[in-house]
Length: 287
Figure (cartoon, rainbow, N blue to C red):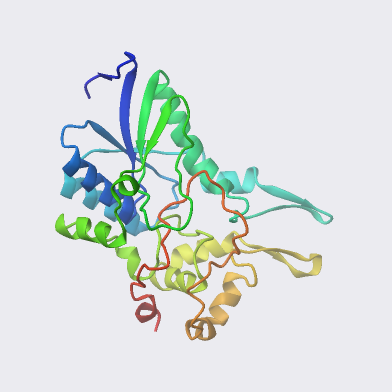
């Protein structure tokens, strides 16, 4: 990759971080069409807990767009961070606990810190132009890395007024399409993502029973001590399976994540859907 400098004679890199979801993939298409001469570097931070469909989609992006994608990995696995670092003191002793919308330590340890360390190692003396696939019609804040003297975020979809339908058109025109997990889930992210609705948890159970069982193994439930650290606020994953029929017939079960959202951090949120986005047939996969 050739060396680029800005008007202050500072070295410059243009980076587009792919999440394995539709918006960042569409942004890669859009940037190539609008700025064909811009030398972009594509990266993906692999938490080690991604869905198989995510890796498949990244391979498809590589093939269709003919690009290289740098894969960044955390120093430790999720299991190591969860078992060794994330414990909560109770009157009955210390117990491992799970991430939540209020305490998104998984995103910090598995996504943000590895990416920051990679930037520091490779581009500590560069100005980084970071391109984020946030649409103009998205409701939630998804700012990406916070801007600083050395990191300048750009939001091409917002600047040019692109909405959900525009993203679908870009993916269709390029024959890239959507990630296959959209048939049962509305967002990219780890297989145990706490933003999943209960119906999407059932989708994981249907599509990837091994990953569902793995997620279930991280729950800590000790009734006699009042200890209950579960992925959903009001039930364990075992209870979720036992209540499968009720959940599937509840018209509101796809509206809210299993974990309540009281406060969303500004650091990074991957592929959040707005209210207007479509349900890609979750129900038919679970009948």
